[in-house]
Length: 415
Image (cartoon, rainbow, N blue to C red; front, side, top):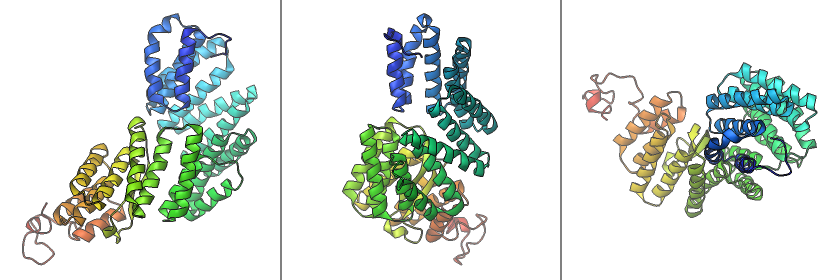
């Protein structure tokens, strides 16, 4: 929508919903836009385009790309009628994001490239930089990693020249992800540190990702310091969404591992409050394990973890370590309800059962974890620690291999 000296009442409301989108409060913006739809009959074509575009952005943010495509196509048609190349470019860029999110990588790449060309024609430097970054992202998914790395390097340089720290950070996280995939965590940590040394990437996205990798390497104090920097950056930018929630969650895990249970729970409570407000999206997350699980490790990794569910699991361990066994079980069950198709909540529940002496229930939980993720070595190892026979392919009426003389279903296969 073009800038006006005096905005109409509808234009002012669209500015308010846009501000919510800028804060990534897509649900709140969508509710505001829904209330405005009754007024759309009196909207100017520019206001209609802006409303439809914002609806598309909200649907993308809420991970509903099919609905986003519908709104964005309608918005694009209005922009084309108006002959406004800038609004066309932003709609095409957002459409690229929707198709990318749907896994339609070729179509996403074509749309990103089309938007990039429009931004180049307009000499819009920020749009050009985003174009390189967007193309890098979809080319990773297409397996074109060399070209993707070049795109991200170009975008990083442009964002740095523009003083756009967030743009730099998004490129850095993608470049370091490529390093991680090809060379592992240690190399990725060094890459993040090298980027931070350039003093243009001091952003909570970088601090969180670096801190998380250091947590995975059990470099707890460096991880804590970087995560705290991330929290401070979020607070300075007035970011209150799930990004700060992830920082709080990771800090909570570190304090659990350091046996600082009071501060751990404070962080986890803050994380839960964030995730309750911003529930969309999953991430690679860590669930701490009790000390008795040392044969498996100090934590399990949820590769596609439910943010609130993982927070509940870590709070469950805090409760367990405080001797609040019933509360621990209840929190773990809540996590399972949020992500029952994943293995990690059953694995954590199994360890809670095991440390409380309920071997049969532990074995059942570990078996559920293995059934969800049969190739996860930590889950198999947890099962073997409890009942090595459950991981074997045995008929329930076969003799139990422990030598008891009982049928497997009446012995180590019970439950």
